[in-house]
Image 1 (spheres, rainbow, N blue to C red):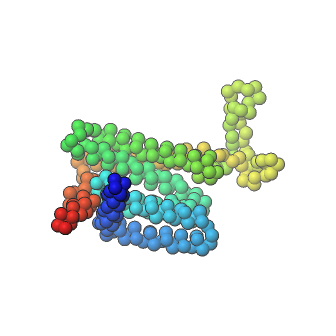
Image 2: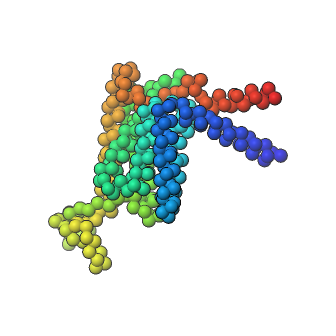
Image 3: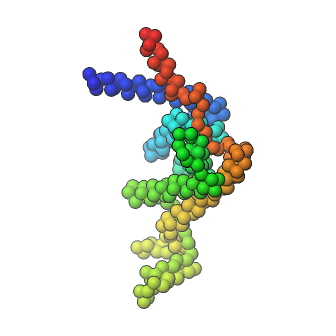
Amino acid sequence: MENRRRRNALSRKLKNMGKALKMELREHKSSFLVYVTLRLAVVAVAVLQFWNGNYENVFLCILSLMLLVIPSAMQLTFQVELPPALEIFILLFIFAAEILGEIGEFYLRFPFWDAALHTVNGFLCAAIGFSLVTLLNNNQKIVFNLSPVFMAIVAVSFSMTIGVIWEFFEFGMDQIFGLDMQKDTVVPVIRTVLLDPEGRNVPYVIDSITRVEVNGRDLGLGGYLDIGLIDTMQDLLVTFAGSLVFSVLGFFYVKSRGKGALVSRFVPRRKDRDREFLRIVEEEERKNEQSE
């Protein structure tokens, strides 16, 4: 009996979450239009990949469909309001990274694609970190107040932490599942103390590298193959650049007491009570139960 009661409670909760999520998705017409368009595009790509027998790409499409719900789920769970511009940016970022980047192979076709996405990611994560501090500063129940400078520093730190965690994830996927998420770089020069003839801590330089053989096979790359390090450092550098741009804008936004039009489009705020859709759905359910 107790297990059945728990299952019924869980079922009601999931049902309410589903209703509230639909309301959340439809709240902003502009972001909802983008969401529907991208979702249809992902479904079309999934059907095409399944038809061609690329089942790994089908899994990526399913993952993308789940990720596209994240902005609305965040708003529902944390009771925050994402500005339409921020929500659209996140949706487009997910599509650009998973569908265009991985399935469309934009990472290989356009050398700048990965760097551009990491820059945007740094900007968006800094906006989220900045918003967390803003929400705490405006919360009357919490004694928490940071100056504009420290808010900017927290935004950069939050963004860089997310960037580092992502690089950990890429490294783990490459090591455990044999993928190549940390893309390699062809370089003409290497410096290493391992080749020093005297075994000292002195870098031994090999430059003008045009040909490399591995197990007697010429790689045909025109240089030495760096294994992911340069890619990782470039990703972190552009992430830092993106976060720094937003943090500077956020600093002046706070100094001007919220008058920055650009930053305000990317800073979430606490939801108004009449927009707390999960609470509204639960209250409606309780009223229906009482009326019965």
